[in-house]
Length: 164
Image 1 (cartoon, helix red, strand yellow):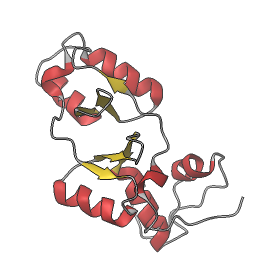
Image 2: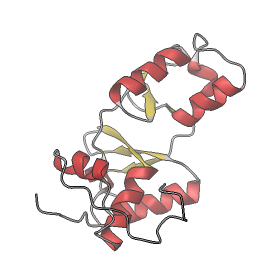
Image 3: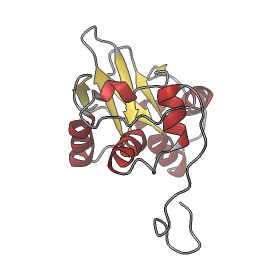
């Protein structure tokens, strides 16, 4: 498979590869966690128009504060959802995420289609644009649909004894 670099000026929606998990405010913490795990995503959208979002971080904080899996997720969602147009460039979306200190960004298309993009995916796209040798296998699979030969991390990228 030919290595194709994602253009940092490409629309952020081009990185939205996973399914969108929709939940309700009445769902339990356990139900939301199971839905996210089942879909392999790190965030769920509350309602069809993204009235709120719940992330792995939100669920972790809820459990750490003494809530149990049967408790409703309602009190642990992020209600100030940051949205960008699906045509926003990857670089602009990264700036929004860093400036707003968020890990997940909701994109909205012309047809009101919603997707969620994680900071990890944005960072991977930007890294491989700067240094194509640094290409995360998960991004390669997500973008191209098939795995290819893994490329080792360059020497000096991680401190001694640490690989990420």
